[in-house]
Amino acid sequence: MNNASAPALRIALLGNPNCGKTALFNLLTGSRQKVANYAGVTVERKEGSLRTPAGRRVQVLDLPGAYSLNALSADEAITRDVVTGQRAGEPLPDLLVCVTDATNLRLNLRLVLEARQLGLPMVMALNMSDMALSQGIAVDRAVLARELGLPVIETVGVRHDGARSLLAALDAHVPPGPPALQPWRAPGVDDVLATQAEVRRILALAVHEPAMDLHVDDAIDRVVLHPLWGMAVLAVTLFLMFQAVFSWAEVPMDAIKGGMDWLGQAVQAHMGEGLLRSLLVDGIIAGAGSVLVFLPQILILFLFILALEDSGYLPRAAFLLDRVMGTVGLSGRSFIPLLSSFACAIPGVMATRTITNWRDRLVTIMIAPLMTCSARLPVYALLIGAFIPARTVGGVFNLQGLVLFALYLAGILSAMGVAWVFKRWRGGAGPTPLLMELPTYRWPNPRNLALGLYERAMIFLKRVGTIILALMVLLWFLSTFPAPPEGATGPAIQYSLAGMIGRALEVVFAPIGFNWQISIALVPGLAAREVAVGALGTVYALSATGDDVAAQLSPMIGGSWPLATALSLLVWYVFAPQCISTLATVKRETNSWRYALIMAGYLFALAYLASFVTYRVALAWSGG
Image (cartoon, one colour):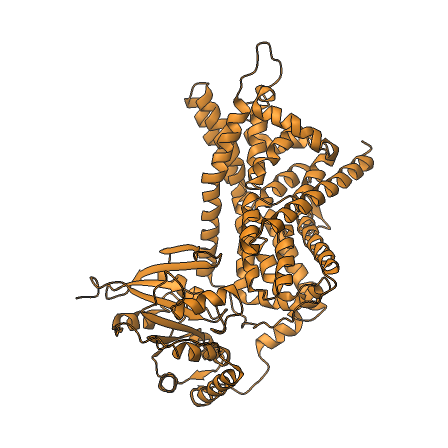
């Protein structure tokens, strides 16, 4: 049987966090990936496929990163169960590829030795071998293979041909039949000490490192990890990131807006007046189009986050913030989940499973929604663009970017305040100590950045094309029916179901300055926050007489809303109650609706109170 017709070879990538395993997985599988969750848990399962140069079909499973098979988190437990055959419905891999960081074998070899005891067919990939060479680290692969008793190959996950040796090994691998899997048992203290001694023995034989000298990383860390200068670097980095969101996105946003305007006008020109044209122009184009225009700003934000992660800076930011977060009862370990929440609170909440202390994990879950997720960005961008002048401050800084930075900062400070309250509520329990590996600095890889941005763009576009589009059609229906009665003088939407709902909700939200149009937009925003912008586009398109209203949403609200209302709505979205998907995720992660309901309740109370104070102060300040 030739390679092309042989059954697919199932391999699993096993390795420590930050060893380049995911970069190698992306290199091997490219766009042929499936991402889901393991059954019964919210740990991410990534699987992909490839064909080797000889035509062999290979299924690749990217296991969650683990430092040891003695699991301390849900991620590590999944990895342990898969490689030990304890995961129901998950067959053992035909080949285990142990991915290691060639610049840090002292840490990585422990997992290799633990996995070797299982008796599975294995190969060890010396990843980042180019970086090890540039640092003067010489690894004798022949000696390493002899001492470990398994093949050792070199890989570079960020190079186009960096997996060539691994592909050749996959072509040459002959499955030996069902493996004689050895039963796994949790190691005791003596076992751990013996493993560490074996790591030192192998390193002494196979690895030769240059004499310690002043490394570039050390010089950078003296600034980046400094209690004062490090915080200044972090603040400047975040500040520049939010400046770029407005400054860089202007041209592509104008292009998208022009395209949507042209599309709406083309549909109007080629279709007769009627319900179908209203659905297409006022519902779909006005709704989904007003959300799509913010894609450039979201991608710019993610470009910065991905670049900082790929460079090795983010773990240092966590280490730097450990002392600050300790004052509110958290540890730096909460930083990564909270940073993930800037993208979306759902992966942020899921990332808390790496926090071993339950109380720390629960508090991190409860404050994750206060990190300003990307779904809020369209709302912020709309209101800032409509009410904040596009001028420079001090001849350098963009005023709109300053306001956006202030909103993000308000969310962070609010999260710290809520964490402090939880700390007092739970009796002042201290945070757990932070132990974290600091990876070597490296230039962000353009291919990884491009793939990450592509994935984020696809997620956003799928939301626009599915949930947002469906909600826009539903909102159009509610805004169109029933038809106004005979002799009605106001816009048709006032007499519709949506108008009735908006008028009822206006009684609740009038004290914080929200009109009935805003009240309507808040309802679909419970499903996805960015829908609020599309909802406003649909409502205003149907509540005005101009044919080009959807394209003029920003100047329209700028001319019809008082500044106090805009400021109140901005503050509302700093604390806005979570979308339904996030609340469902909280329920799954905590196994209780109690915490999801507590989260929704305290966020609504904070949002209403903060908006009320903002609205009243703004009215008094403006003389209204």
